[in-house]
Length: 53
Image (cartoon, rainbow, N blue to C red; front, side, top):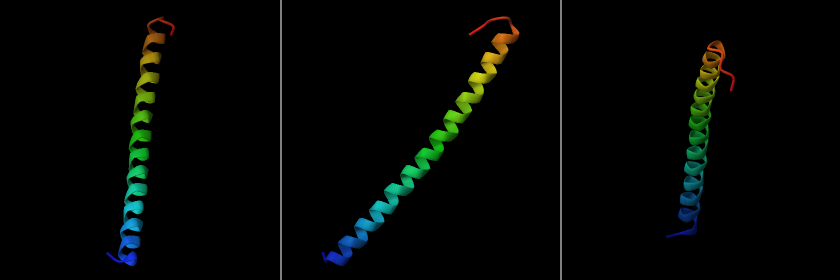
């Protein structure tokens, strides 16, 4: 395999990894955002019931 082909494969692989990391980061940010909202909602409901956390 020529060096040019290896360089191209290395660049494409790096781009895929960067893209996967970005997708994963966004997904986790979205998930944690949802979890935070649910936690706030639960805390609010507990507070309305007179339970402090």
